[in-house]
Length: 89
Image (cartoon, rainbow, N blue to C red; front, side, top):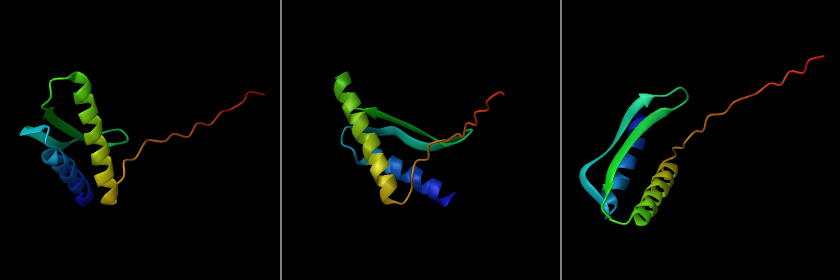
């Protein structure tokens, strides 16, 4: 739980630190236990008018979040599945 809390705090700090993110209303919150995930809700207003630029800022934010989580020793797990194929004889 301490690592999850740290991850949420890191994400929120990335949002706070970015000059093109409106501080009012931004948030990162542990939202749910998924089937194979711990879901964190991230919400922020990016203060640019151009859609393409907003997508670029979004990418910057996500890459920075990923880098800061890695620096803290946290990783994003991706679900894996094992598929067994059975042949009929």
